[in-house]
Image (cartoon, rainbow, N blue to C red; front, side, top):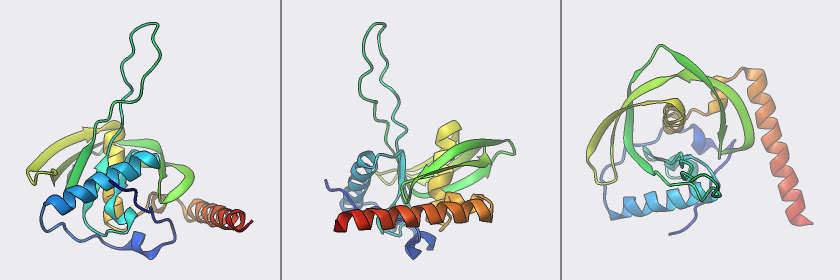
Length: 185
């Protein structure tokens, strides 16, 4: 598998609507594997295909549960629990809302409190092309909503005030300039 380049704001592709996946085949499964490798390396817990410049309705999530530890033992590496969502649709959002401190691989090192519905019900295809439906709460609900937003050209900073959004975008631009300057030296 190979690592892919994660695009960052203000790349206009991040504002594009992603097209539906037409068929689930070995080529798509290869893309899925590369997306997981890229997400784990970043490191992150969710990645939409558009973030690696593939504007298709595909996303991967892995909240990576901590490995259970017996008393007196050191914690091991997290247990991977990969989830693949092809052509995901959010069917229902609860009225109850929850605030979570979100970040994004396309907006590096920036975090902000975002309020979202606490529970969502979704439908999607899995990596075998089988239709699935399920209800999610907690961090999985937040992550799924965040990644589906990406497929619709929406970033987590769009849920913030204009002032907070502008501050974050300026910080990302400054960090990018600093990285470019350091690379030249």
